[in-house]
Length: 425
Image (cartoon, rainbow, N blue to C red; front, side):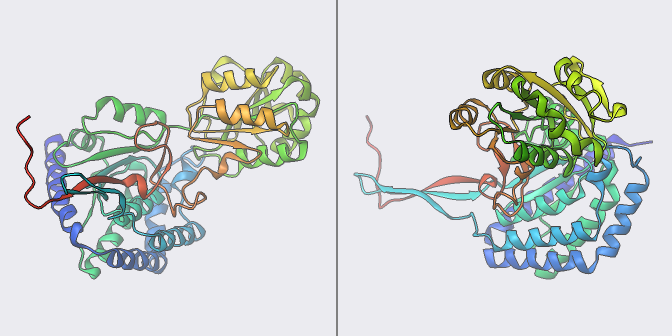
């Protein structure tokens, strides 16, 4: 039987120690931080057998048909990419102690606006053990301690990764600036309400997790929203570009938040629809839910077992699998209106050659990342040159889009005076 009080007490103890460790980080130099990240990259490769064995235990508890299975999976190539990302973060300039602005007031006081760490960042996430590496690297580079609340699906993987991180920190003489909370659900509530110990919480996962954190947290939250992603193929779209972009956006990795969910197509280009989606059926067995016009065109030109009439619930759905909906529109304005109604404000794309249509789309579509003639698969911190990402924010305050080092900093005012006092007026 789960003892909720014991779990909450363990979480509180861990958070108290983490706050102390975050203060010690203020004396750590950027060079020391970079040495830790490089050492962790080497250790992840040297101890990959241990990490992969733990990951295999997690995978053994999950149905391979579960859309989360791919997110949970680690393998040698993914660990090699994780190590490369750690090195990339180490190579980036430190975001700390940057002067954002400065001025000297008429009374002689000197003001500086300087970047500083947020302090303690909490990340709540599901079956994504790679997130454990990414979050630690970015938070440490920005001078933050971090509390990780992973799900039970990745319990063994996260335990192995955090144990490795603690070993590297200890060897470097740094405090344990990462705390892995128990994977039980009972550990979540004390984290969401730990205003005295956590400065910011970032949820990463499905819409259910994000909504729960937003509704129950008293600590400030930055949402990294679910991705309900559209690509609009305009009347002026290039067929070859569209075919390649659609295939890549839908099938590169179906379980990620920037994967394509709904294809919008201008009614004048319906005759090209079979060619646009041919590889989705022949190579990838993507299940398509098409509206009446698109369904009629695709009949006989797309595998029948993967072609279905669309219902209302197929629009505004994040599939996270080899499924996609298709909607026919009469204009770019109708496409923009559809996106505005169903979008999660994550990533949206247009395939078009008409510059006026492209400009309207880029200007009027409200999303964190808006593409013209490119795949939405690029919405990623590493792809944007940020080294890695802690999440992709779909809100507009403080951070939007891929969040990395700059978004993990706050700022403070430094004022240097020489005895100035303010008058009584």
